Amino acid sequence: MSSEEVFQKLKSNSSSICEETVRILVKIVDNIVKDPNNLKVRSLQKSNSTVKNKILAIKGGLECLKLLGFQEGDTNFVLPSSTPISKLEEIKRSLLNLKTNDVHQGAIPKLKTDITASNIKSYQENDDDLDNVKRFVLPPLTLKFANPFLQRIERQFHHALAFGDKDCQKRAKKLIPLDQLEMNAQRNLRYLQTRIKKEKLQDPEFSVQDMLLLELLTWFKEEFFSWVNSPACSSCGKSTTAAGMSSDQKDLTFTSRVEVYQCKSCHHVTKFPRYNDLNILLETRRGRCGEWAQVFTLFCRSLGWDARYVVDELDHVWTEVYSVTQNRWIHCDPCENACDTPLMYENGWNKKLTYVIAYSPEEVQDVTWRYSSNHKAVLARRKNCSEDDLIGALIVLRNERQKTMSKSKQSYLTKRLVYELLELMVERKPHDNEKLGRTSGSKSWRMARGEVKSENMYVWRIANKHVVDDKLSIKYSTALDKYEFVKGDGCVITVDEWSFGVFDSTNIFRKEEKDWKTVYICRSEGTDTGSISWKYELENDVTRVIDVVSLKFNHKIYENGVVEIKLISDGICVDFPKSEESLETRAFSGVREFSIQVNLKGGKGDVAWQHAQLFRQAIHSEDYPFVLSLTFKAKN
Image 1 (cartoon, helix red, strand yellow):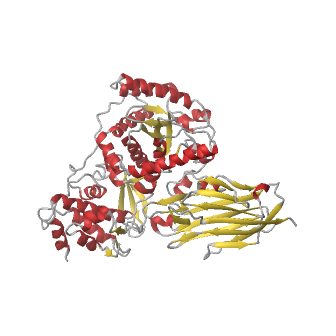
Image 2 (cartoon, one colour):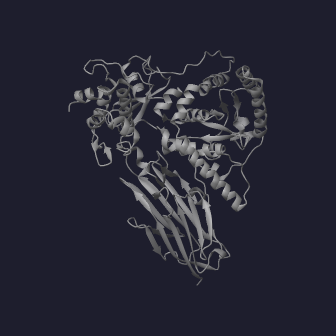
Image 3 (tube, one colour):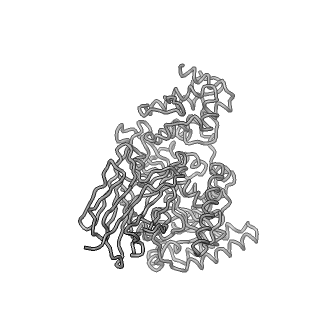
């Protein structure tokens, strides 16, 4: 069937059905063009409700998939990797030009749908009618201050009005899988409450909101938003390198900043707009920390939470969410999936903080002190204006914004501010998880910014009481995200979360693939290498020494991924066999300490970081893919 016949068949549906099917097909193409090496976006499951009801059930829908190059299998459609990107782009343009009243007309206007990533790109490239694009329009701003730094605060505070837009919040809330996240939050809260009761721990007074916030952070990073170091070439899909900024006014319709990249292979120019319009970002779902934090802040506001956009003048941004249960603002960095670790930037990223300002539609606040454990040093670096001028400006801006609010609302905000100011006066020392380096962005980018740091974390110390009948084991389940220290007599000590049992790690995280229902440890997205190690030591009271080390260490590689595993102790080094998943050795007989060191590298394309995996298992599995068993003997 020719392309005209395919489009004619698709056109025979009603106007609304045709336009919806075109929108979905264009989105599928955009996902492939954006990440051509990602096998998941090239595979469409027949059982998926959108594929089944909005493509396969529509006249011409199946033919459109085949026209794009998708091959039909028993349960899915797969697009071969050999399919040229140029072919997809050509069919995409034809779909966008499809007019429901006559497919054979020449220049056909674009579908008048809500703004999407695909038609934004077409508008910019073809300079067509821009009236169809919905944009958030801010009221006029009259600057009150002459100081450039204070003017920046004024402009950012003005832009924060967008977070209060009710229509935008409704759009955002519809995108959140709230039922699933709430179910996960309830489950985790019950688990936490059980542990507190069983182990007689201090109750941290977490609420469902607090647990839901953690679920939202994870979902946002792993499933909703994508980090862009440099965009893939829009022509051939290969990597690009920065080539400056665009000054073309056609490119600057939706934003004042458009980065230009050139393909390393075909030299085609690809443009990457840095949008700050929330309506656009809900569709493009990609960018760097600015885009991430804006959309995450909007999502939090859409759930009815007080949330604000936090700007570090040294060039990073994140979110704060107010916990009603804990009566305080909670730091949330969606790029890092980090929650309540405000000292991480100073202690893990090595930032020399100066000004950190938080913005919401209702208030603006200097929150620098929450993010530093050395207030005196920070104060010495603040030279943009006097402290009195800054405080005075924030008061003026806050009072101006709140003057139309009810007296009760003003009173509530004032009381909350007083409590916050008291909190900000107290210096706090960093916890271990606030000493970790940055994970978002490419390794070279983070290294150049001095934001990668590795910290010693945990040593498994084996005491005499643990060695019963000359044996013990330590094992880890990725699905349960739990270690079990099993003594020789069968008694068990547990340690929750993978990171709390490792000695050292760099660019490593636990990945949940909820669509495939699997979980594993791998290197962080966008990084070239990752490393992780575990360390084991006998306490002085142990009267015996290690005899045999047995290790089960399940791992998987894809494409040309590499997993290197070594057992090391005082000059002794044993390589874990590459083709095996278990090892037994007496090479460490007589030692009192050793470590397991693992390097992850290799892989192909933008998802290379996924091609070297540790401990992959089904998300509901109760097996332990990492088991270290030790037997002991008397000293010689």
